[in-house]
Length: 124
Image 1 (cartoon, rainbow, N blue to C red):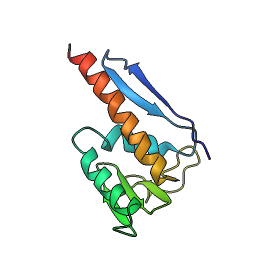
Image 2: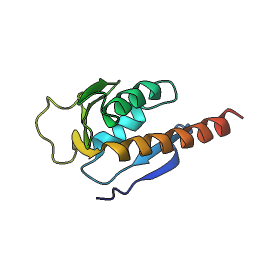
Image 3: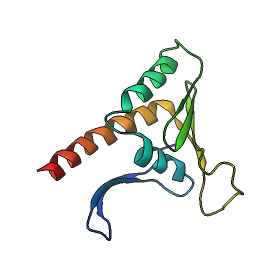
Image 4: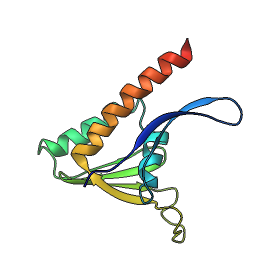
C-alpha cells in the first residue's frame, strides 16, 4: 500500500511559519509523530531503534517521544499518540495507525531533509 502525504510550509495566524506533513484520514497519529517528535536532535534514537529491528538485532523495539509511542516490528510499526489513547473513541481523529517500518524510515529521512532546508531558510 502506497501512503500519500504532503510536506509543506504553512503560515499560522500569528505570522509564524511552520513545516507540516499531512497524511490521509486515519493517519493523524503519524502527522503527530512528525510534528511533535521527529527533529534533527531526536532522530538518531528513532533511527537506531528502527535499524536494530530491520537488521534483525532485535525482534521488537518500543520508543516513546513527546506525543507518540512507536511499537517497531520488522515489517510494520504501530504509531500511537499516547496523549489520546485513553480517551473515548473519536471518529474524527485516529490516535493510532500502522505503517511499513522501512517506509517510516524513508519518510523520516525525507522529513529531516525538508526540515533542514526550512530551518536554514527561516534563519536567514
